[in-house]
Amino acid sequence: MLVEQEFQFKKARIERFLDAEFEKWFPSQAKISLRQRQKFIEHCKSRIKEQHGTDLLCSLKFTKQGFVYFVLPPKIESTEKGRVFQSFSFPHIFYTTHCLERFNQRMEVEENGIMLLDSLLSEAMVTHGDHDGYLVCSEGVFAIEEEKDRWIIKTFIGYDLLTDDQKKKFFSLNGISFLPGEMIANEGFDSDFAVSDEFEVFPEDSKS
Image 1 (tube, rainbow, N blue to C red):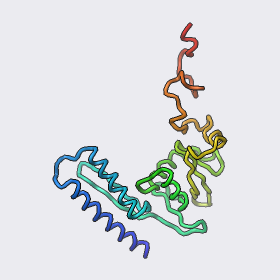
Image 2: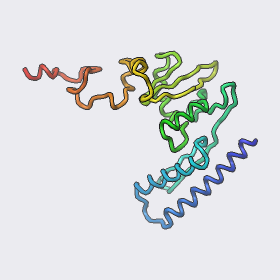
Image 3: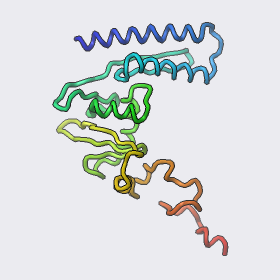
């Protein structure tokens, strides 16, 4: 009950803050430019993170009906591994506090990190079974522990923090669709190899 009361208190403060900031930024009903909308949302997310952390799910957006937002509580359980946060998208998946905190730091997240983790995890799901205890996405690697009825995401390792051996292990040809952008050539002539035939005639043959 205490957790619910704490959430309701934070929710009310966030809603009052958002209403007040909107009136301050846009006192008239004139048309609001896309740039103004982006700056306003970035400002609000930064302030909410500073004052309330990133545990809450706080979605802000502009629609045809105007500025809308919603605030939802985190789903937290106490386990032998400490507090774990349930995924908003996948009921059987839980993130450890360590995973969430490290992810927010590494990715410089200005909002609830669970939303972005869920997005990356949906991408990584297709690699389940390829590497025991790990899932791979375009931004890095999830270390997971599979229990009877749920998965615990222990941590997230960004691509830049992987060793050369780990990059070779996780980002091999089997995981080629998840190669980071900096490893993919813009032009076929600049590449060291091709995953599939992209040329009807090989470059060296085109000169003959």
